[in-house]
Image 1 (tube, rainbow, N blue to C red):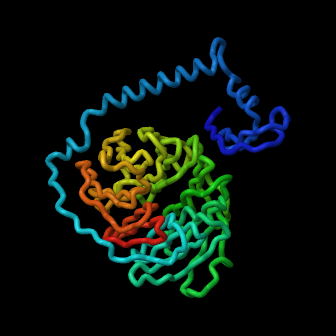
Image 2 (cartoon, rainbow, N blue to C red):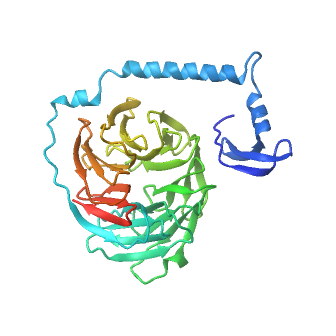
Image 3 (spheres, helix red, strand yellow):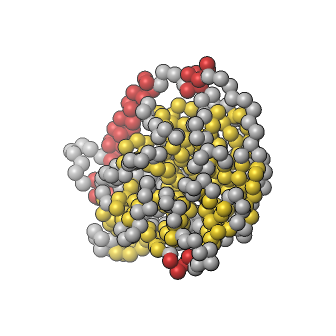
Amino acid sequence: MCDQTFVAATFGPCESCGNASPLMNIYIKTDPINYCSFCVEMMACEGLQRGETLATLKTESQSLKKRLDEERNKLNDVELHQVAEKVEVLGALSIKTKRVLKGHGNKVLCMDWCKDKRRLVSSSQDGKVIVWDAFTLNKEHGVTLPCTWVMACAYAPSGCAVACGGLDNKCSVFPLSLDKNENLSAKKKSVAMHTNYLSGCTFTNSDMQILTSSGDGTCALWDVESGQLLQSFHGHTADVLSLDLAPSETGNTFVSGGCDKKANVWDMRSGQNIQSFENHESDINCVKYYPSGDAFASASDDATCRFYDLRADREVAVYQKDSVIFGASSVDFSMSGRLLFAGYNDYTINVWDVLKGSRVSILYGHENRISRVRVSPDGTALCSASWDNTLRIWA
């Protein structure tokens, strides 16, 4: 089977044998089919050469994977912190809470900055999406979705729309206007539909396309105007929890991470998985590109953050301490790429020196786990969202 993803178990007639039984919704290339487990196994056995079994093929694939790892390790000649030994140590950081944004009635699950460096959007378990002015703390727009757990939100590049979604399995886009009393719900446009919860969304370099990730194990690219599916990405074997678009004008790649402990890099044009990294020991909660686009970082429930060089095709640094035992939920880089901000489930934000691998600061203030950290587009501030129902602006 080529490019398969198990999405959900349902009950009904098998499209192969016709028997009523639990079904596996799988993809052959991009075509969904519903087969029972027996027919899936029979299909997997089709085309096997004489003497071949699924067990021998599995053994062969594992040996090939081992050889690939060995070839990778031959290139692993030096660690990042060794290269950075002659780089100057960072001075003491003075980062403090400058604003606290209160207005959500439950856990804040996501936030995103507008390109104007002033406004931001947040979504919450209370079912609300709020657009804020981070300078004045004013709420400029508010909309209540028909479901709770709005797990994803994103600002459009133009600043004229926001996208959001969660347990409704949809990604909805709301156009914003200067009239703050306007009913945004009336203008809602449902763009994307998954078969499980929406975990992440981000606009591409225009307002016309949006990229989504979902608990159904897939990512997808959609046309905002028509709601048409432009490309689907199958390769994760469990919930996809996060995605991030490569930071370039012609960004044709993105990275995703999920509950299968994998971080996958995708080609948006072909839908192919072009690189895969499996270094974490637990769910990957967040992935974020380095400002140059040549690397990315990941945050995981295994209490580590990891840094991957795409050109070297390997992990080059791990950010961890024995005293850090709680999972990392979100990461973002400073504008220069020297600092990595990581939010943890112990209510703190740790600041890591990307080159040296050392922790340079801890930010205290939140009273529950951090769900999101994002550096402002101009790099002058950091916003954090938390399960304590608030957002904080740090500078």
